[in-house]
Amino acid sequence: MVTARPSYSRIKTALEAIRDHPGLELQLVVAASALLERYGRVLDTITADGFAIAARVYMVMEGENLATMAKTTGLGLLELPTVLDNLRPDVVVSIADRYETLATAIAAAYMNIPLAHIQGGEVTGSIDDKVRHAVTKLADLHLVSTACARDRVVGMGEDAACVHVTGCPSIDLAAQVVQDPRLDFDPIARYGGVGARLDAGALAHGYVVVMQHPVTTEYHAARRHASQTLQAVAACALPALWFWPNVDAGSDGTSNAIRSFRERGNTGCMHFFKNMQPLDFLKVIRNSRCLVGNSSVGIRESSFLGVPVVNIGSRQAGRERGPNVIDVANDRQAIAEAMRAQVAHGLYPRTSIYGDGTAGQRIARLLAEAELRIDKRLPE
Image 1 (cartoon, one colour):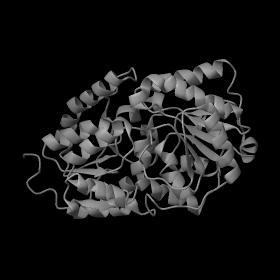
Image 2 (cartoon, helix red, strand yellow):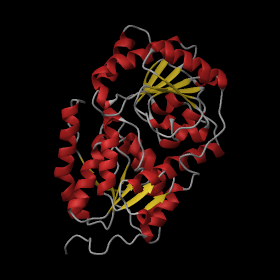
Image 3 (cartoon, helix red, strand yellow):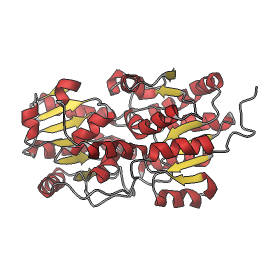
Image 4 (cartoon, helix red, strand yellow):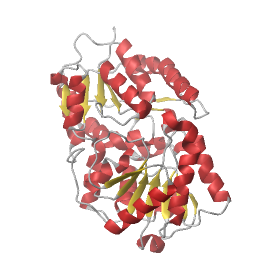
């Protein structure tokens, strides 16, 4: 099930490998913010990539606060059993740690459908850890990204024979970009967005990418955090391509900070996007001088691409990282200083912490070979 913009990028190559595997049938469920225009309507990207949609689940409660996160999860738990009852899958595949995945895991577990979990065993802080570890305890097959993640899942009491280091499917996409890293399109001409008109000529002189999401355990501070980043990026001599936040508690605060900054005329060299196709997105990152914010793409894909990263705040605390990352607090001066250092540094050597670019194929093979279905089918 794909529930959000980052979830699709994280699992795309696994979906392709599952679809193309002779022993597997893909039934793709798209849900939550992946269906909504406000968050980039990832559904359009998924269908453009040739995937058939087996079911759509509308489950997002508006409000972007802690209560609506819980209610969205509850709505998902109300709707998903019907979807699973109709599709009657042999295995449900869920990814990562977004709160919507908890509804998927609970529904599958109570319906005696084996659950395969991708990207378990990682540590980042915030509510994500609780969700990720809860899904791990509900899962039957664990497809983790790193050796440390494997050890952590086994340490939680899971059967080591059911825990497999596959790497992260998003690294498969990064490996494709490494083969041809050229920015061979105009991001604004292709994806629109709002803000400064930055043509290909302007971007050729260098730009930064910004991805800042609210931290759910600090969501009251989301507007202040975003304001600090906005001021630091505005002080940078380079244009900025900025992506709107995910649908989490506090995302309204982040969005309001951006809109207020724009209304005051302070975003002259910034352009804002809702979404891009995964490969285009990684090409934009690979050709940037620096990635700024708190997205896991700075920790995962950017380590493989060697892109300099300024990681802000606590959202990625505890996650394994490469030498390409400088960690700073939510302070405009610290952010600006780190940006200057990273822009001056240039590309770092590539690291393979999160995989070698073949995770999708491994995941499909393990799903085809796993003996999880015995005595766990839905009743006839």
